[in-house]
Image 1 (cartoon, rainbow, N blue to C red):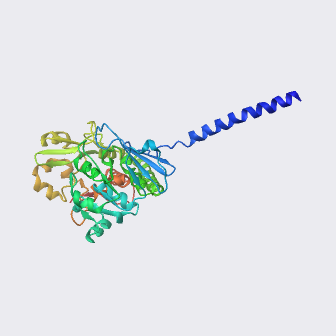
Image 2 (image 1 turned 90 degrees about the vertical axis):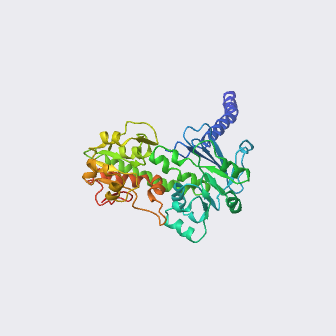
Length: 378
């Protein structure tokens, strides 16, 4: 009997310890994980009743991060987070400042919540252009000098801004006037899927994270499938890019978003060894020496025909790709006010861009597919 009571006593004493360990494990399991996989510039941590978005790379070499609290109805935000801007979600209306933000609104089915945009002529989306024609979207001027009076009158739930550096006087002024500003750094991402994943940023502010995750998963799946198809290509065509603007030839640097797509499509971009995510600025002679015999040429989008190219610079005829009429452009699809759809939609839909490039470089692959953005100039 004495041994029996000792066993019972040990069980009784051990039970609180077991419960304590269980609670600690539960707490560990309840720690939210970052919902973002490819994008390097932001994170989303979902808590009960609120989410925390941290934008860590809003512009190149940014030395500070920006944290925003997205508070749901009846959500309780810890006192430790009250130092950060709090936005009530789901939001009802919005101002965005880059055309790359427009496709996310459209894909989430919330384009009608857009109430203002700087330089409306840049927008190509047919749905949003219809809203503009109906006077439901206000003109806000230039991005670096937004019309503060109109914005204060609109009182949007949130303004999605972006910065080129740490100097954002217009956005700072808007915040001083009580408006909520969230910085978006989608343009600063280096990977195609990283850019596209920013749809989750908009999904969070609209309370549509599940839909945003689903849309991105479809993009990711199509992109990765196309990557596998590209690997079947039996050649690596040499690629010339860009063209002259004033007295310089501008073409993408080797670690930029566009160059990654060329590489993943099994292309041999002639300046792939350069580093940087912006543009190279070279003389015509330098480009001619290296790119004269390139298999194909992808222009910047400023020309709609081979004749337009010759009219701008007759020396383009010295390139083999031009002579063989193997020049491609993405300028064909435009909004009715002249905005080029590629600049607006391509960063959000890298799987379409990749399919286009694979079809151009390896015509034998993706049978039956017709490029959406790119066309061969005539």
